[in-house]
Every structure is written in C-alpha cells, then in structure tokens.
Image (cartoon, rainbow, N blue to C red; front, side, top):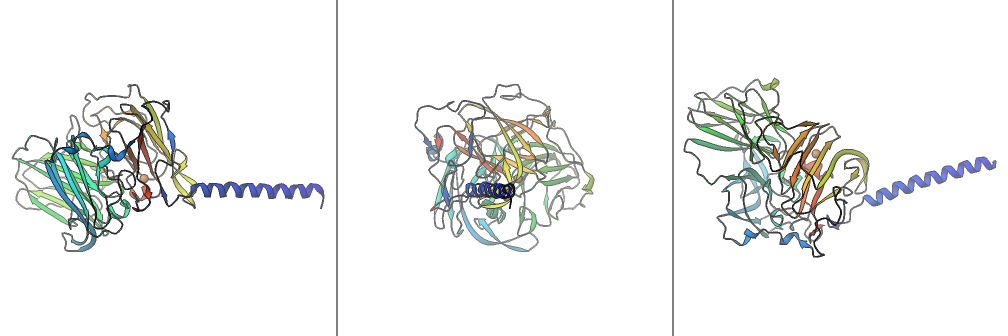
Length: 492
Ligand code: C2O
Ligand code: CU
C-alpha cells in the first residue's frame, strides 16, 4: 500500500472514532441518575438580567418554607380526599376500573369562596405509585403546589399530606395528582375546584361544571358518556364551567342559544359578546366558562366528536345534536373589549425569555430518537428560567413542531400580548395554560410575585413525560426534594 493510501485509511479511522466518541459522549450526558434534583439540570437562563439580580445574601429558602402567611389561620373549608382504587359506573351503566378520589371520578367538586383559607387532607389508601395534589391554575404558595420531587414527596400508601392555603382568585380550576401524572390523571385522579365570589349567587342562576375526560377509553362529560339532561327554567342565568382534563384540545359545541365566553382559566373576560355556531376549543388543562340565559327551548352541550352531551331544557325535552361539522373555532384573541392591565407589551421587562419547542435527533436518558427539545436541549438539558421576586418577565413561546402544546406555568397567570405578531386587541386574555398550535408564536408576560420553584410544562402529559418540561425558578430558592429517590418521585 502506498503511503498516501495508508494515510487516507488512518484518517478515516480517526474520523470514525471521533464520531463514535461524540455520539458516546452525547449518550453518556443524556443519562439521568436514579435520583436527582431538578436544580442539578437545566441551563440557567437569566433572561438577559445579571445573574446577581435579586440575590440578597447567600441564605437560600427551601420551597417547603414557602407556605404563605395564611397557612396558620383556621381553615374556612376543610376537605379530605382519599386516593383509592375503585370501579366507577358511567351514566350508560358501563364500569371502569379507575383511580379515584373518594371512590369517584371526577373526584368531589370542591367549592370554596374567595378569601377562604382552604385545608385539604390528602390520604392515600392503596395507590402504590403514590399520589399528590396539584391545584391547577390556583396561584397557591409554592409549598402547596403538589409536585412530587419538587415541592413535596409523593404520599405513599397509608400516608397523608395536608394542603392549606388562602384562595385569592375566583373562577374555575381543577386539581389532579402530580405523581405519575400522565398515567394517573388519565385513570381518574382529578376533580374540579371552583372558587366562588363572596357575594351569594342570584337565586335564578345555575352553575354547572363539565369536565371532559377519556376514562377507560370512553369520552365523558363528568360521568356522562351519553346524553345527560337537566331541567332548567327559562330565564335562568346559566354558567357552564368547561374543564379539559384530557391531553389534547377538546372542542365543545353549545347549540340552541347564543352564548358568551365569560372567563378563561379562572379570569373573567371584559365585554364578552354573544356567539353562535362556534366550536369552543379548550386546550388540555384549560378552563372556559360559558354563559347564557336559558331560553324556552332546549340547549345542548356536545363534546365534539364524541357521544357525551348534556341537554338543558325547561321540561325534560331533549334536542338533536347539531350539525357542528363546519362551525368555525372560537378565537380568544381579539374577543371582548379592552380593559386596563397591570402591564402591557409596552412595559419595561426585567427578563425576556424564549421557549422554543422543537423535535431533535438525539438521546434522552440514553435512548436515541427524535425527542422534544426546548431551546435546542433535550430533557434534562432544558433551560431553567431564573426570575427574582417583583420582576416583570416576558416569554416568547414558539411551537416549531406539528403537535399542539398546551403550555402550563404553575403558580402564575400570564397575559397574552400577541400571537404571530398580532397584538391582542380584545379583552385582556390571561392564561395559566396556553394551547400553542403548530407554527404559532405567542408573546406572554407575567409578574414574578409568587416565589418558588415552579413547573412550566406541556399539559399533554405524555409530552411532559417525554421531556417537554422545565422550571421557572426564583433566585434564592432551593428544593430539598429529589426526583426518584426513596420517595420514588416521578412528577410526570
Ligand atoms: Cu395541571 Cu403541572 O399540571
Ligand atoms: Cu406538548
């Protein structure tokens, strides 16, 4: 062999070895230890601010100390939720082996009034993998956020955990386990949490919650897998609280009356206008409240592309399902009329972040594939958005994939500033869970007014399990809890 040939072969071998080394290194780096703290991973992203911004001394506060000052007050409402296996019966008579709170799916609807101190005792009777309760959309103190391995340990069989917090919001929320949440929310560990205003409701009003879920493969509204009915006298003010506890956007069709979208994610819209022949898409994890005055004829709520429906009528008379195939989707952007907000697109932002969702070829925890990536990194190499108390933060959320991502930030509400460059000219639109459709780019902003270590993840919980999850962390906060570990914490 000539020298040149030998050199070429040697170069090729070296190049191959280099590639193998790079790939092996990427594989090695992607592996997660059996036990780790979420603080260990993630690229700290200070959003353009100095890393020292907001740092006061070297004392760190544990998330377990972030209980809020009201936690010592005597509760106004006390509930006990016991997680347990049970066989539940749907309206059609079909039964499903489920995981339940108090033997029911959905779990009991908890109704409280704004300003109340709420105490919930969680017990775990027989859910081997453990359980927690996250108060989705309720901006509770961090210690009560209910995330296994981040703000508490999963409650084992026979164990208990007490949540106690003052509710300052009003509106429609829900609760669910945040331990093995992908599997166990689907199996039934969820329920509605409604915060009513202080003033008593007028006597001629009806307030109903409808949770869309797929339980044991059956699409249901609460437990209704067929057409449920309810008598409502004409002239009644009806508020329908729609909750989506599934993984993808659910569309609701309300027919037989014009209606208004009164609230999104527990925050009333300003100046809502009547709608008709519109499907209302509710992103996974989100809540939309619809309102109308009961006419003399039946009104019907259909969970689109399912058999689950609810008919309200003055006399028990039913109504046919609408031909809702070609109804356009309701769009919150631009709906309603403007009202003052505590900040706007023109405000000065202390932190500016980008949350770009993509798919990327690489390794996740040692397995090669096309994985979800946030800002170019595959979990756990995702960003950690750092904020300081009082900061005004802006996030540009970009969905560069072909799937919908309902992005949920714990502990805060975000004001939607624009979508695809179009500013929101309607009612202020606040969200805790934003359905980001393929190709969409939203600019949202929030005030960092609730110190802690907060999850920010996709509420298609299968995506969260597959790595579409990250955190917003306040400087000076740390968590003593671990993912994995003796408590077997697996929040997703
Ligand atoms: Cu409703 Cu982190 O979830
Ligand atoms: Cu997703």
